[in-house]
Image 1 (cartoon, rainbow, N blue to C red):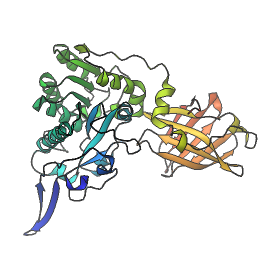
Image 2 (tube, one colour; image 1 turned 30 degrees about the vertical axis):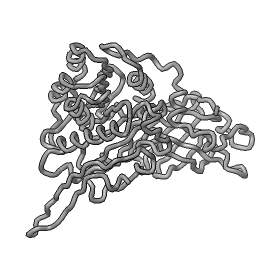
Image 3 (spheres, rainbow, N blue to C red; image 1 turned 90 degrees about the vertical axis):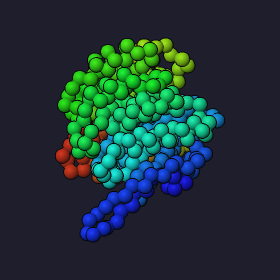
Image 4 (cartoon, rainbow, N blue to C red; image 1 turned 90 degrees about the horizontal axis):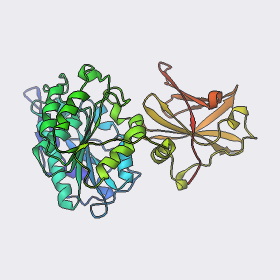
Length: 401
């Protein structure tokens, strides 16, 4: 099991002082079968552990998969880092034949003395080697922020890797509390020993002091004889986490998949084609499979007026989060709302009310979703405490298998 194959973080008290001891364990052999990579684990006394990225999608295993992607998350010194889901764009990769797993780290160990970077790079390389030994034909590394830099550093250390994907890569030389140093990433881009490189630099990256990093990366990568995908500050992505959002998956998820899957792409910059049917991406990311899909309302006669104008699956971008909603039959004339989100790809079906020209539902986290028919349909999400509200137009999808 994955729980027995990772590092252990032991803590004890010595002479009144708390001492943390990190014991690094080599990875155990794994078969790549789904049962070994349980989702939503707690770290316990482990520094590292592995999880499947998407537990509702089956792993194909080394014999049938195109390859495997090993994901590294960012660093914050809190549980937020390792609880964060894999970016939805990687779901599109798994649906196209890749297995995607996440290498997670205990947040307490990130603030210990010593090099978190060195330990994480070494463990990433061990997992990559274990994947290759299992028989995966391609091994790609991917990560966000610190995890993106770990991935770049790993492919600089070992030539036995096929691709790297780095979202807003960066490292804090002083640990989780230090300042990010963008120049370190530039040096790694010059040296990375890998078959193809994808790097994403959103604009308005507050953790890098709002610096423009794409131009420098382009100058470096253009001088190398390697295929590369560079999405810079002109790509329409914003904020340090702009590459791990539903907006990125909608605009560039298929392009990233094409870049990694294409056989022997030529050296130089890879160009993304426009997405011609956004609904196909939304459907793949958020619409439940037919067997698990609730029964959508198709006849509105039994319901109040706003229902008729909002039939069918509808989607929107709330800030950078992709959401899908659909009115669902609750039985005995009751109305329910299916709500699914790219932020963790979660959601469910919730009781809804329809009155005064609006439809409302309260989600499991106590936030409220309001639908109105104005302008072809709008959605408003309001935080549980009312401190934040997001509004966006709804686009009509297609109710199809």
